[in-house]
Image 1 (tube, rainbow, N blue to C red):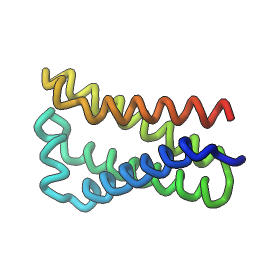
Image 2 (image 1 turned 90 degrees about the vertical axis):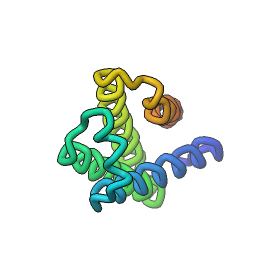
Image 3 (image 1 turned 120 degrees about the vertical axis):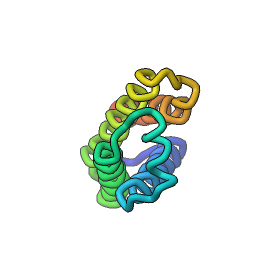
Length: 119
């Protein structure tokens, strides 16, 4: 499957953002774990989310390289689920404004998923 250039760019950016965020959380970087802590997410859960983010990024890149849409969709769905979880903690803690980055990523991921599935 050939991706149109805008979808390709969006998908690559999502893979990079997800991978970098995932690596930071999995490695236990205090700065990367401080934001989830501030909304009540336990470190173990944040590291699990980081692992999922990293795997999602890898899945997207492999899907693009191997031209295998299922890997791309799996990665995008994983990012979508992790962002829903992030928003849950932001709403639960009453820190809705600080959840904007998760909402933005969720929105872009939804657009990418819609375009990928339609193409």
